[in-house]
Image (cartoon, rainbow, N blue to C red; front, side, top):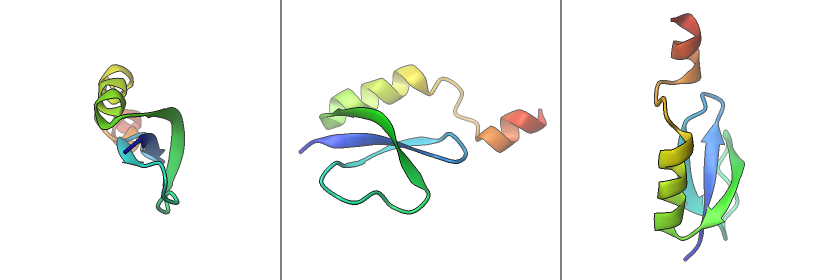
Length: 58
């Protein structure tokens, strides 16, 4: 099974099966692959796991 990396308005990342319609509130982050590849990609790009709204307040 292949997955797509998704991101929400708070810039939080997750993966979702690429053969399904994305859930409300999540957008395609532009990366597809196996579960392992997607999780490795998220580890690379999501370096600050605080929600965007919290980062902006600090």
